[in-house]
Amino acid sequence: MSSAWQFYIATLVIYSFVYIIAASGLNLQFGVAGIYNFAYIIFQAAGAYCTAVLSLGNPHASGSFQSYILGLSLPFPVPLLISAVFAGLLGVGLGAVTIRRLRADYLAIVMLVISLIATDVVTDATGLFNGATGLSLVPQPFSSLTSSTTAYNWIYAVYAGVVCVIVLMAVRTIIRSPLGRSLRSVRENEHAASALGKNVVGLRLFVFGVGGAIAGVSGSVLVSFTQAWAPSSWLYGETFVLFTALIVGGVGSNLGPVLGALLVPVVLAEGSRYIPQFGSPTLVPSLEWIVIGIVLIAFLWFWPRGVVPEPKRIFPKSWSRAAAPATLFEDDHAPQRVGSR
Amino acid sequence: MTGALSVMHERRPLLSVRDISVSFGGVQAVAGASFEAGAGRVTGLIGPNGAGKSTTLGVVAGAVRATRGTVEFDGVDVTRLPSFRRARLGMIRTFQLHGEFGKLTVLENLLLAAPSQVGETVRGVFSPRHSWRRQERELVAEARELLERFGIADHESAYASDLSGGQRRLMELARALMARPRLLLLDEPMAGVSPMMRDRLGEHLLEVAATGIGIVLVEHELRFVEQVCENVYVLAQGSVIGEGNMRALREQAAVLDAYLAG
Image (cartoon, rainbow over all chains, first blue to last red; front, side, top):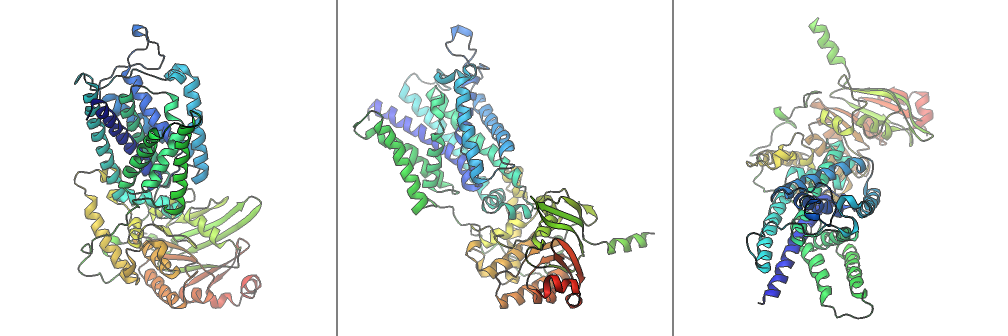
C-alpha cells in the first residue's frame, strides 16, 4: 500500500474514533436521557479551543500572527484533561440555565439558538480565538516520536483509539448501571421518575456535564490532530450529523453510536468525495447534506430504533431468593421515618 | 409525660393537608381544601369531574404548587419540598394515566423505585468492586417476589408499554411498594381496570394498608371506594364538602346535591 493511501486510511481511522467518541457522548444525552441538545457541537468546540490555547503558547512571543486568550504551553495530556473538565463544566453551566424550565422541543430550540450565538460570538470576538480565521499550528503531542507523517498518523490513531475505548467503556458502565436506568426513566417519564424520588434536574445536569466532557475530549483529540480549529469547523449542522449518526446506529445502545459514527459521518460524508464533479462546484457538497437529511428522515420513519436498537435488559433467573417471605415487607424493608434518609 | 407524648404521636395523622388552594390563571382548581390521612388506613377523595381531586393529590405529592396552605407529612411541613424529596420521605404516588416507563421492562420499572441504590451514584457506578451488583441482585429478588404476589411475574421481561391497563395498575402498585412507601397516593387506580382485576387490586390495597402504610386514593368508582376506604372526603369545586364513610356521605344533602345525585 502506498504511503499516500496509508496516510489517508490512518486519517480516516482517527476521524472515525473522534466521531465515535462524540456520538457516544450524545448517546448518553439524547439516547439514554432523552435530552435534545442541539448545541452539542459547541462542547466539542469548547474542548478543541481549550486544548489549542493551553498548548499554543504565548501569542505575543515570536511575533505570532494569531490572537487568542491564555496562551499556555502545557504538556500533553494536561490540555486534554482540562478540556474535558472545561467542556463538562460548560455543560453543567448551560444545563443549569436551560434544563430547569425547558423540556423537549423548547429545549432543542433554545440549544440551537445557543449554538448559533456561540458561533457568532467566537467569530466576532477576534481576541478570543482569532475570530473567523481560527487557530492554527496547534502543537502535535507525539511529534517527537517520528518524523514521518504517515507513521505519526498511525501513532495518533492508536492514541485516539485508546481514548475512544476508555470513553466507550465509561459510557457502557453508566448505561448498564442503576444510574443509567435512572437516566432512562427520566427519558421515558420524568414525572413518574420524580414521583419515585429521582432528582430529574440533577440527573439531567449530570448527563449534560458528562456528555459535554466527552464532546470536549473529542474536540481535544481532533484539534491536536488537525492542528487547526475555526468557527467553520463547528457549525450547527455538525450537531445534526451526529444526531443522524445516532439515529441510524441506534439510540440508547452501546454499539449504536459506533456503527452510526462509521456509517454517517465517515462513510456517507467521505463517500461524497468519490462522486464525480458535475453541475456547480457547490452541488456535490450540498448533495452530501441532502443525503444525510434523507437518511435521517428515512430512519425516523421506517427504522426509528436504528440498526442496533437499545437492548432489553433481561436479568438472570438465578437472581431470586429460595423462598418468598410470608409478608409484603421484610424487616429491613419496613417503611422509613421522616428524616431517616 | 412520655406516655402522653406517645399517645399524641400515635394520634397524629400521617398526612395533614390544611387549607390548600391552587389557581391556574383565573381558574380556582382547589379552594381551601383540608383533609387528613392516617397510617394503615385507606382514605378516599371523591367528587364530580373538575372537583380538584387530582390537583389536590398533585399538591400533596409535590407535583403541583399550592398558592396557599400547607402539607404536613408525619408532623413535618413538606409544602415547599419538590416531589422527589417527598418521595424519598416515603410519599409515593401513582398516576391516573401514563405512569409507567414504557421502554423499560416491568422488572426494571420496579427496580427503579428502590431507594438508596449504590449504583445510582457516580462513585458507586465506577467503584472497582462493583458493589452495586450485589445490591442489584437482592433488589431483583425482591422485585420478583412483589411481581409474584401481584400475579404479573410472567411479564417481568415485557416492556411496560406492552401491558394491559389492569396489569399496568398492578405493576404501578408493586413498583410503589418497591419504593418502601409510608404513604401511597393513588390517582384513580381503577381507571381502565377490568372488574375481575378490580377485586384483586382492592384486596392488594387492603393488604398493603394492613402493613401500616397509609393510602390516599382519588377514585370515581364508588363501589370500590366503599369497599376499601375507611374514611372518605368529598370535594366539589375545589373544597371539601363532606367527610365520613360512604354510607354516611350518602345521607348528606350537600354531597347528594354536588355529586352522588348528579
